[in-house]
Amino acid sequence: MDYHTLLARLGEGSAHPGGFQATTALIGQIGFPRGAKVLEAGCGTGRTACYLASLGCDVTAIDRNKDMIQKATHRAKLSGLPVRIVQADASSLPFPDETFDAVFTESVTAFTQGSTAIREYWRVLKPKGVLYDRELAFAVKLTAAQKKKLQAFYGLQHMRTVPEWLELLSKSRFDHYSASPFMQIKQPANDNDPLRVIDHELFAKPDAVAMMMKNERLMSSFSTVMGSIVITAWKA
Ligand SMILES: C[S@@+](CC[C@H](N)C(=O)[O-])C[C@H]1O[C@@H](n2cnc3c(N)ncnc32)[C@H](O)[C@@H]1O
Image (cartoon, rainbow, N blue to C red; front, side):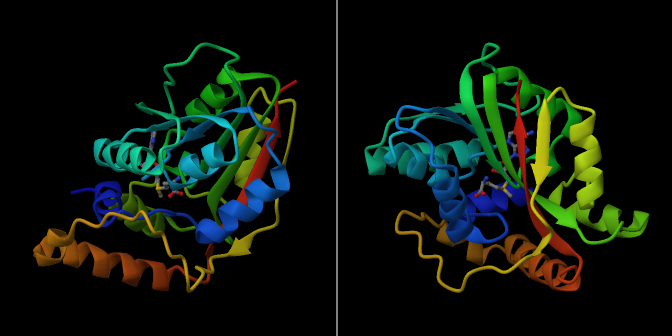
């Protein structure tokens, strides 16, 4: 089982730094108008996609992982919200050019071949469209051994400092972009997700329990250097 399948089976609703509180705060700041066509890339179990739909956005959500797609579809059905959910790779989006007003993504691009996903986000945005991307970022450059550890467990493809994220954006076709300051990871204590569906049999599987424990250990050993940023990038 890979890390994202573990998250899916745990029904994790906000698998990114700051949790759902950070998501709702960011969406509040953005203030999407009703009817805005928003693509959520890497929607996980669909909590954010449903929240955006509840605000009146016209939401399409994609994820590569089939267990995530299943959970997201279930959540949308339970919520009675119209979210278009498609299994797809962020590096090869099955949508025509200039489809969306905004691309919203949290903790996903770091798991992709970064430049390809960024190119795809740009391609599917309409002119004047905006990318909002909350990403894992590191306070210092990691050593090759540290990167290997995180790559092996989480499947992270790149582990960038803030300047390295900005360098990636500088090579993209986005007209202009900015990044928030580096924030250390603080998960809110109370992140109650009423529609979370946990596959409880997971807790009887020694390999799954070992993965959960390894996750805790890694998060704790990288806690001083691992954090996040929010990238905003505008298409001309
Ligand atoms: C850390 S989780 C974040 C999920 C969700 N954005 C959230 O914040 O709860 C990363 C998600 O990205 C998805 N993912 C990873 N690589 C992807 C890719 N290349 N294309 C689409 N989805 C991808 C995973 O399946 C997983 O659902």
